Image 1 (cartoon, rainbow over the protein chains, first blue to last red):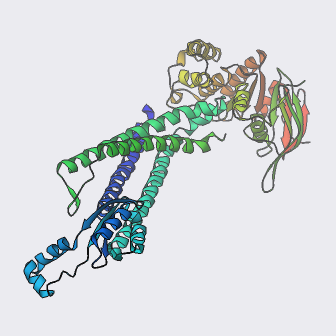
Image 2: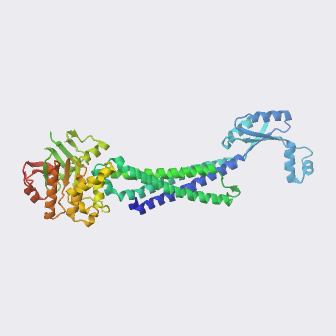
Image 3: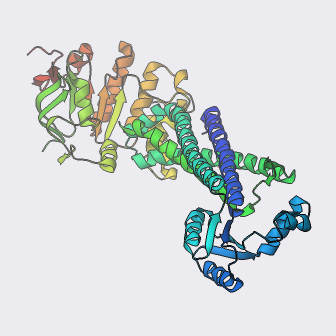
Length: 279
Length: 230
C-alpha cells in the first residue's frame, strides 16, 4: 500500500466525501421525519356531540371512545367551557350570550388524541358512527396533506439515500479499481506462479476495508462535529422546530455510516479485482 | 506414461478462428522440447492450454496423468506451481529488487518465511546473479533480467518449465547463455518446453522439435531442426 499512497488517499477521500453526504442527508431525513411526527402527534380529533346530549350519555360516550383501539386520551370539553373559549374572541361572555339570545348554542365535544397519527382517519370514522356524535373534525384536509407530504418525503429520502449509496459504491469501486489496475502485473504474476485467488484477494480486501474505514470514519467525525455544533447553537431546522437531539440515534447512524463505508470499501475491492483474477 | 499428454485437442476462438486442430502429443519427464512454427501457428495457445489459462474446445489434456480440463480454483493454482513460466518480456516487477522478484514466487504460495531467503539465494546463485540480488530490474541487462525471470520460474522447483520466446528480446551471445542455463535446468530433471523462432538455437541443440502450422501439428522429430514444412 505504501507504493500507492496517492491512489489510496484518493480512494479514502472518495469514501469520505460520499459518506459525508450520505450522513448529512441521513440526518436531514431523520429530522424531517421527526418534524413530521411532531406535527402529527399534535393532531387531535374533535368529536362534536348533539346539542343537549345528557351529561351521562356524554360520559358514556367518553368511556366508549377511550376503549377504541389506538386511542390515547379523551378529554371532555363541556359546552360551558367551549362557550367561554369562544366568547373571549367576542368581547366577553355576557355580550355573546345576549347575542345568542341567552342560550349557549354549543354542543359538548370530546377531544381525542391517538397513538399513531396514521390511524387518525379510521378512528375518526369509528367515532363518527357512534350514536350521539354529530360531527367529527380533525382538520381532515390539513392532516391528509401533511401525511401525504411526509409519505412523499420518506420515499424521496429513501430513494435519495439509495441513489447516494449506490453512487458511493460506484465511485469507490472506480477508485479502488485504479489501485488494483496499477497492480495488475503483480496480480497476473501471482496467478502465474500459482497463488490461489483467495491469497491474492485477501490483501486487497483488507486494503479496501481499511480505506473504507478511514474514509467513513473521517466522514462520521465531520458529521458528528457539525451536528453537535448546530445542536449547541440550538439551530432551528424549520421555523420553530428544534433539531432532533437523540444521541443514541446519532451514534447509531454514525456507526452505520462507518460500517457501510467499510463494507463498501471491501466490496469495491472484491468487485474490482474480479476481472484481474481471470488469468 | 507421459508427463504431458494432449489427446485430439482443438481450440476454437469464436467466431471462426481455429487456433489448434486435433493435436495429439506426448512429452515425457525430463525431455527438452522446442515448439516451433510461424506466428499465429498456435504455439502460444498450446502453452496457454497447458497452463490452464484457457480450456480446450475439444479433447483432453493430462499433466502427470491427471486431466487438467476439470480443475477448479485452488487446483488450478496447484497445477501452476508445478509449471514454471518464462516470458519474452520477462514480466518482472520494476520497483522490486531481484531478490524480491524471486522471493515473491515463494511468498505467494505460502512457503514458510524462514525458508525463503536460503532458497532464493540458492537459485540466484544457480543463475549467476547472487551478487546482484539487491539491484532493480532496470539496472540489469536484458539477459540478466531473463535470468531473474528464470530464477523466479524455478525457485519453487516445478516439474515443467515453459518458456515462451525466452530469447526473443536478446542478442545471440546472451541467448546462448540463456540456453545453457535452460539446458542445465533440464539436466537436473526438469522438463523444458520452449516456444521459439530462433532457428539457429534449435538447429544447434539437436533436441526434439514439435512444429505447428496453422493450428496443426506438422512435424515431431526426435533430434530435429528448425522448420515447419510438412
